[in-house]
Length: 427
Image (cartoon, rainbow, N blue to C red; front, side, top):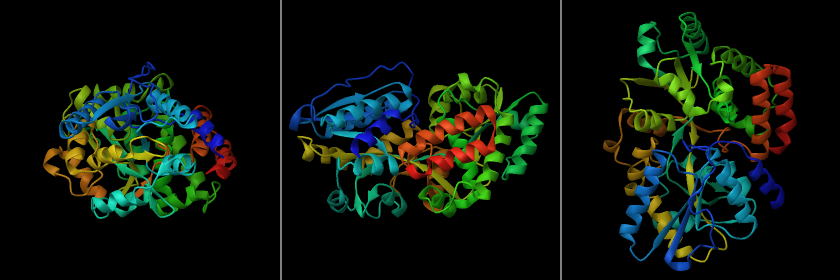
């Protein structure tokens, strides 16, 4: 079973919440088990892009300041928006050479890959020692749990069902924020007639298109049935899934012609410079707008929930756990305890563009978008993202990405539905 899981991990093309370059470079990727024994903690991630790297380095600096007897090795692997890192991780885990701790999305990416392979230690005692059970939402704890045991510590929260828009473009064209699919189509037709690309997309890596499709599914099914779909309780030929595919195809009528040659950052730039009006992207895009492109929240760009998903929160969470077989579990637990603290989360998340996983963080450290998202996180229905490995196994996700990629080109609803049905046994 583990060999199959590793092949699936290696095949994975899903993106992470990352603005990494595609140069394939790595920072200290090679290591020995635990890499350094009891005086060193190796942190394995794909956080090498602006914002995320700043946040990671700030975390490392603070942890080392508080733990001068420990050294931290930053084993970040760049390139492929996380794909390269996951391939390196799979090789190391297969060779019984795990890093001290590693970045992994909560949900099925954690549970069906590493917990199912018996590669992770439970962290229930760590949660009890730090009184964390009421500091993270129950739905979030469930996302990092399997068979009643907790396996990782969430450090951030990203939202996937958000659309960012160019405020000047909306104002100049008299566009109101659309709340329904029909309102979105009306706005998109108006923008297209005015010579503006309504919806920017960069699907050089197919996960960006899968994100849009999963949000259409969420709008059409609602949160409960969306979850049931990926648990196998609702079939992929359900009429609402078919309708979602049709609506997804309609949205593709409004994207930029050069979408296949762009990554998500390139598509975000279209919105930033006014060539496109909207972008459906996780809110790492907000960090990119602010940190890289120097745009101002609610002045240069605004944001709203994907039409039909208001009151729902498509959650993507980066987490870190305790691999089995490392030489320094006590030292790693110190780092995990630090990651789960309000101090660490309020250092990291404002720089990355995400919000803290804890519900008691200091809201004053976050901008207006952060405050709004934190409020929604506490009140909205949380649903796992398919595109980012939380809703279904990596085997299913790989095939879903392939099916969506073909659909973007051919727009054949029947083929998409049949491909998803064929992949369903791997969920």
